[in-house]
Image 1 (cartoon, rainbow, N blue to C red):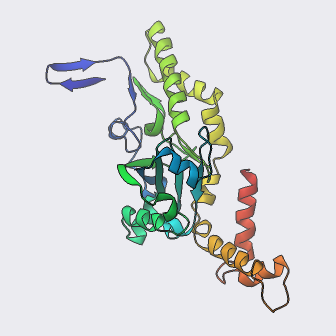
Image 2 (image 1 turned 120 degrees about the horizontal axis):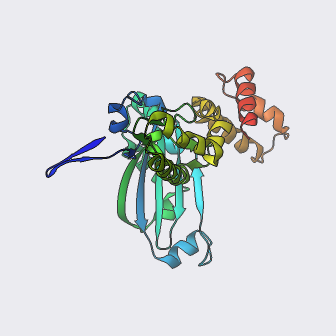
Image 3 (image 1 turned 90 degrees about the vertical axis):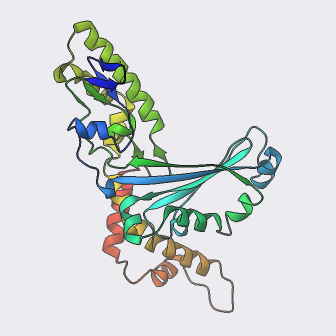
Length: 288
């Protein structure tokens, strides 16, 4: 492998590719094809500055505590994805992650979604009076275990470039996978250098290390969860159904009270049949 510089070309026996989710280097090395929109998420985040005492008061925290909230449903206007809000010492991080295919179909700008979320009555008071300090965006691979080739002759892929992320609904993991894959890549290069063998067969030791670690074990364990999380029902029908049900259950009026199952049945959206519900529950249980 080589890198072109103004002073000339720099050659290396092995290159560790870590250029992010939209890895052009991996694509040019023919280790991956162009990504599909449904396998990629877009994360956007704002950092809003607030005094520490104000954050502690709003979130009912002590000085040594923090808070992290996750949201699904109205925050992304029913698109596949979710929103988050968490505290730092003197700032708040607020943002969302939305599936690119879902975003394209809806023809919405991501900032429009974020603005909608920040104006929600459950969120707006927590952000009130803050000063915007940072704005960032990040592509997130969502292919899970069905990923691209991890290595080839003289090449190793790590982190997002290798598609090493996992969405479990409430938790999106990627940083720990990136660190672990970087360590495994370093060990692989060290071993290859000692044997002076940088072939694909030699570098396959990299995948062996990942298979022995939590990285590929966790990705394999929850490999079917992505199918459930790509169902629009999770972000549209179910939130509407549960909110309607909760409103009915907690409404006190002059009418006779109904049982929870009867309310659930009555409030169920018409386009949501019990076969679909059972299928989603089964998939969810398998990935607990």
